[in-house]
Image (tube, rainbow, N blue to C red):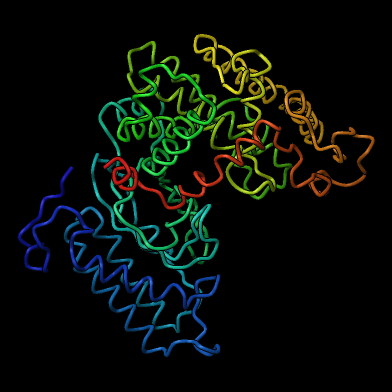
Length: 465
């Protein structure tokens, strides 16, 4: 939806553009933020007394450039007026108090993008924050994003998958912290003096998810010589279609964390658990999205079949070979899905070619979802440590543990006098190593995976052109 320029906007130096990133003030804002970021410490502060530190006047000048740019751009985004006012106040307070650890709670509370979700609506977001799977430090990041909220998705959220905090979003432009593998915008990453009582939104960039899915899946399909159904081959070649699949997948996945038979805090906040517990939770949410997509396909939703193949291929091809082999819980979930389908003869690796039984894939994938749901349901009646071992048994039924694993030897090998959280120390960093199949695939696709860092839909368009 194109934002309408008002007469006020014209008087405040807004040009006749409908994209924030086309206004010259955006380039000025982005440049000033990029200048500030290297000066910041991990906690977001700037130590003006450190060797090589910039003069305070230089930092303040950059902050004033950011403030002026926000004020010039804000009329283009009237729905964010209160946030931008609070943002300017937070920036000025940070400068006036000597650039210490930033506190942007006031502007965070004023930013309410989920209050009125509209397809195509733009937001200019600026916070001191870390980016998940990106920059671990709380540096300033600026991002212009656009909402993805088509009517069919809004209807599903209203009638079947209530998720009032969820934001499907795409990148317009961003600073260096997002030139990474990060594909989320979460409020809990922002530097504040205290956590708010509740968060009111959470965003996932479906364009980045779709773009890296397409690039890695295309390479995997070629490498494994997988024969795809024609409609799925068409989907993988279509960025917009993949984005629609991912925004539906993300919405159902996100709500699943708080739905179902949950023996523990679904997000496991401030809990220390073995990483396979996180892997099973994320896989449960993905397989629930898959199961719901099977139902939605029967109800006539064209995006639902795409969701099923997005879940299968992203989980099987990208997750296991992406990231370090240190407590890689998403990789574990992908390995588990592949092994489960392989042991049930849905996928076969024969003559250096991958074959998939497309007719049985939905049924057997839902069967794995059922096994995880049973684990959760039974876990309500178990002590924590017993539940962890039950989960280990489920995973190790399909994935071979490391030969040196203490946990694989069973409870007698552990010091059960210790509290459960201490026994996590006995978990190996790579408790379930990659199979020979995935070791070979990782070597062949390593460069492709690396090329998806910072990827956007525009990158895919340039390659296609």
